[in-house]
Image (cartoon, rainbow, N blue to C red; front, side, top):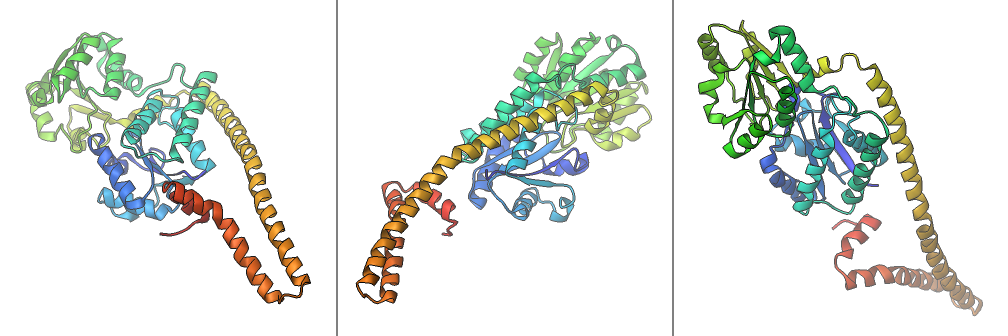
Amino acid sequence: MKVTVLGINHKSAPASLRDKFVFNQDSLTKSLNEFKANLKTGVLILSTCNRTEIYSSVSNDKVLREWLCKHHNVKIKEINDHCYFLKGSAALRHAISVGAGLDSMIIGEPQILGQVKQAYRISENGSLLDNNLIPFFSKVFELSKIIRSKTQIGTNSTTIASAAVRLITKIFGAISDLNILFIGAGEMNELSAKYFAKYSPKKSTIANRTLDKASKLAKKINGDSCLISDVEKIIHQYDVVVSCTGSQLPIIGLGMIEEAIKIRKHKPMFFVDLAVPADIEKEIENLDDTFLYNLDDLAMLAQEGIDLRTQELEKAFRLLDKLLNDYLKNQNTKNVPLTISLKNLFDDTKSKELEKAIKEIQKGIDPKEVCEKLARNLTKKLLHFPTKSINEDKNNAKLIKQIYKLKD
């Protein structure tokens, strides 16, 4: 198993550092192609609000760190103490724990498996997967699904949205008295909007770069829609703003909110920034009439009172280890017959050539000459099948290079 993973996540680094390594989904295929062109291997990149992970067959973690930092124009010393590198079965165990939601900021959250599958589809559509990554992720998807179905890890999952609702109700009172603006119509904000809708907000509006997508989500929650370009003109109408876009720069600035607070006559506003990189300038939290919470803040609140979930997490990891060990044992067993056949082939070749050599020595031929002939014949016989395979199909050349660790 040759797959490795280099990553940075909510456990290893703060949001301010994770921000620097987010891959823009619109240009992810371009980034993947750059990686493959430079490092000559298949690749899958998982980039979410809470993690950036590179799955490939590159065994040198320094090479991966250098590429990642160069791609994002970040000094390598910034990531050295905040990233992790796993290979082989350890990489597989990690990927399964990610897919099953065991490694998430909110344990058991259901979105992550879909995000892993989306990352897989992007690499697959770009012909960027190789013979190592395809079976690797096939097993990740299979075992992640088993873990989620055989444990209660995702049951009544405490979400970021529910943590936000609890906090908002403590500060403002009933959600039904509040106007809420959702900026962005992606998966995270759709989940948030649907969750808030259960509490019947006074008014809900979806703002997005494309009005069509905003309108579709607005219909699902019985709300209104508008373009992101309209936000500055209407933001003062809303008590709560939940933002999660793919913007590489903040879309809600200090000046915009200072003006909104004036129009509201200093009536408080509550901001939930679910985006990485951040959608909302951090300086906004310094205003007297604003409350700003990001993913890390809400995750700490969401993890309160999780005794049952902790028990389920332990159960899920025990199941993961059992499933993984069973799989690895099965893989080793599958390889035994092939190894035996290969050894028998080489032993048979060796025995035949050795028998010829012994007979020649018995005839009085110079032993040195016999040994040289034996070596030549063994080389010729053992090269026969690899050479024939390359001549029949040039695609086999790469496999031969991998087997014998040859360089170009």
